[in-house]
Amino acid sequence: MKKNIKNFITEYGVVVCLILIFIFFGIMKPKFLTVTNLLNMLRQTSINGLLAIGMTFVVLTGGIDLSVGSIVGASGMFAALVAREEMGLPWFLAILTGLLVGLLLGTVNGILVAYCKVPAFIATMGMMSIARGVTYMATDAKPVPGLQQAFLKIGGGSLGPIPIPIILLAIVLVICFIVLYKCPYGRYVYATGGNALSARISGINVRLVTCSVYMISGVLAGLAGVILTARVTSGLAGSGEGYETDAIAAAVIGGNSLAGGRGRLWGTIIGFLIMGIMNNGLDMMAVSSYWQLVIKGLIIIGAVMLDSLNENNK
Image (cartoon, rainbow, N blue to C red):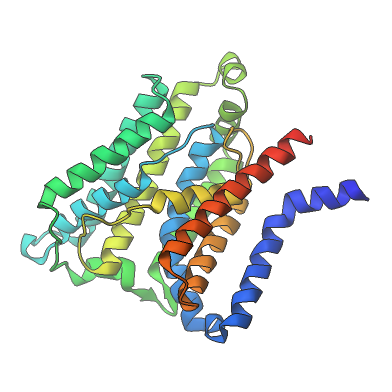
């Protein structure tokens, strides 16, 4: 009986937490449950959702990507430069630019980690600083307004009642579920994180797999940067600062082990929904942003401690 309860808590405890947090904010602030607020919350959460999905791929291989926040800023800024009305270029080129910037920076991360043997923490922390510096230099830290209306719809438009960012997040989720659980690549990712040496002996190109997860993280951060820029209607050099914290928190809360080889994408969904509900609910309750940072830090520490306890008790 005790074992069954323990297994239930380990497997579905995060779902129970999501439900309890949702009920708590619904009771404390009835406006939290309105359709308008819930859709707005999901629109805002889509940014962290994309980052958390990319982070999940990285974490499953035993790595970490601290640069996603800066990649969001860089991708969004260069997309904004292309999307300006005065440029006269097609709006989709701005989206492509943002994705390519994310892919480029993610590829550099992957090469440093997989082929140059630079620890992921150091490589991505260095990229976090480099990408942010390049973003500031691109416009001398000045905002880039006057973006095309067609481009702005990516972040602020809707398809029927559903905001476009939510639709894009759903599409990415479906693709990533297929890649992770229906394709050999997914098994390679788990094998690389579980035991890189065994994976290499079995014929898996561990370096390529490791490099590729940082590329995926970079592309998704690039997409998040495009959506964020379109939502705030201008390119801002400071966009994405601190976003890596929420992304890591969402992945870890969802049950993805930082040691690699163990995790689930559906857990990441629960994780970024919890973070989104927390951000929205605490804002509605007028909780100081400083206290919100403290709460997020405690959540990350608590989630990692719980993961360690579960691992030690196996």
